[in-house]
Amino acid sequence: MGTVLDDIVAGVREDLEERRRLLPLTQLAQDAAQAVPALDALARFTAPGPVKLIAEVKRRSPSKGELADIADPAGLAADYEAGGATAISVLTERRRFGGSLRDLDAVRERVRIPVLRKDFMVDPYQVTEARAHGADLILLIVAALDDHLLRDLHQQATALGMAALVEVHDEAELERAVALGAQLIGVNARNLKTLEVDPAAFGRLAPFVPDDRVKVAESSIGGPADVTAVVRDGASAVLVGEALVTGGSPREAAAALIDAGRAATV
Image 1 (cartoon, one colour):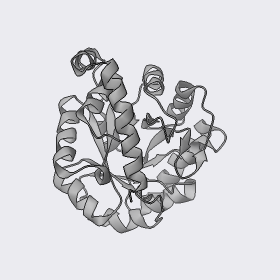
Image 2 (cartoon, rainbow, N blue to C red; image 1 turned 45 degrees about the horizontal axis):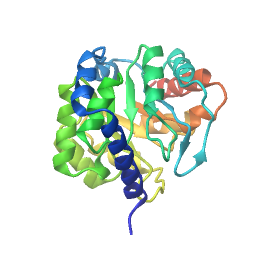
Image 3 (cartoon, one colour; image 1 turned 90 degrees about the horizontal axis):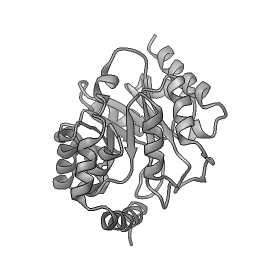
């Protein structure tokens, strides 16, 4: 019996094949080569200052269902940027998250900070696609990739000028991410195979992430108190979606999370 992650990836592959039929890789590669050069996302994440916020444009999720009716993803992203976000994460997976590459295009056009294409990357076509649509970062989920494909996609992203947020949720996956040489390592408190959440995951794994890597806490960030907790456990960045799209004013909510991170380091 397959996991939730297996089911999501199967749908991603089906949708990918449809896009591949409509736009051959040769044309896509030309589009990527003509795109505005990627921003140096890693420099933004390693710059001095308070906790870095990756603020997410997220309509729904497999665990919570519908979260927000986002009619203007670019406007939402602009609010995040005004609130101090370091980067914007844009869900582009359609079936479970309600995202699209159109959302990515709209956000990239509007903001001047790095944009992460957040999807289930399982094929080199998607990496080229991310760059063609203006992404500065991609997400690589260790649980969805074998070592060979993980390395190839990571190298491809680097060659195209992008950074990769390499996501783990347990010790074995963390070892693989560190061995890969990943500079941005995200610890996801949510196990994508079961959708169960372990709030202690970041605190447990963070000590084993080398200090020269950017430690990103993902999931279980429901508000400022959670940011305070993960920053004290070593996080230098947090990725937040649900709490921002459901919390009222996204600009103020983003600023509050960053302020909490700043206070935690005093």
